[in-house]
Structure formats: structure tokens, C-alpha cells
Length: 173
Image 1 (tube, rainbow, N blue to C red):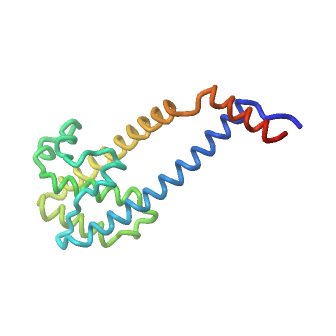
Image 2: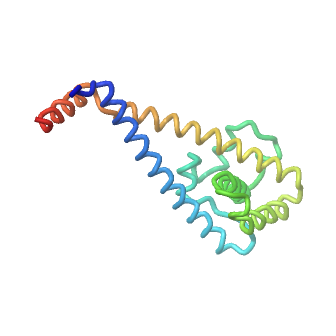
Image 3: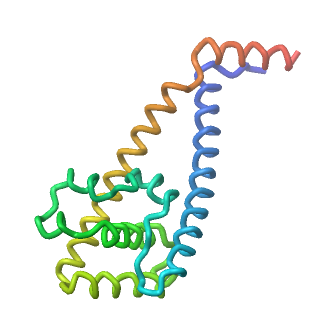
């Protein structure tokens, strides 16, 4: 029987690690969606406080206003209060991660109504929602890259792979 090559073993280990990472991400996503949905309930006005789990997922600090200033946003958006940004970011995150458009329809409508009432400008609401989506996507990509670099830095070394291969061969005897 042909023994698997070191490359094959490493490739298999990466696949297993990737599958495990995906299942952990899915679990965290479900947890953060559950928390986000719960955070909508207490506030009758429709505003949403940016939950720590969600802010960690999208790599946005709790002091979002200062983070957002680094993006190319209009002067009007720069003067928007933090609670509006938190609602817009949470709303977009909820929309992006929902399985179907109707999944969180009531919460999203309530949050959008809140934004319109607070900003008193539907075009500005659309601008903040579009910008929020852009920020979420860019920050998520940045976080994925950082996570990938971290994974590579902590991944199995060639020496460790040889140890594993030797141990496997000994077990096969």
C-alpha cells in the first residue's frame, strides 16, 4: 500500500482546519445574529446598539464614529451621531447575513424607520446604509486577511508535519 506524501497530509490537514474554521464561523454568525435580533427588542424606537459580538465580527471598534472618519464619507455623514451609525451598521449586517429577505423584516423596517425619523432625509439614510455596507464588506475582508495571516503564522511547520507522519507510520505498523 502506497504511503501518503507529506504534501498530501498537509493538504488534508488544511482542508480539515478550513472545515472546522467554517463551522466555527457559522456558529459564531448564528450566535451574533441571535444576539443582534435580541438587541432590537428592548428598544422601542427601532435603534440598535452595536453589539460587541457583531462589532468583533465586522472588525469595527465600539467607538465607530472615530473609525468611520477614516473612510471617504460625506460631510453630512461625518456629523451623524454614533447611535445612528450603530443602527445603520447593525441593520446592514443583519441584512447581509440574513438567509432570506423576510427573515428579519420587522426589525429591519423598524430600524430603517428610526433612521428616517432621526435623519429626516431619505437620501441621507440611503447614503449611510450604502456606506455602512461598504464599511462592513471592507472590514470583513480586512479581518479575513488578518485571520489568514495569523493562521499561516501559527500553522503546522514542516518539522511538525514530519513528526505527525512518523507517528502515523508507527501506528500503521
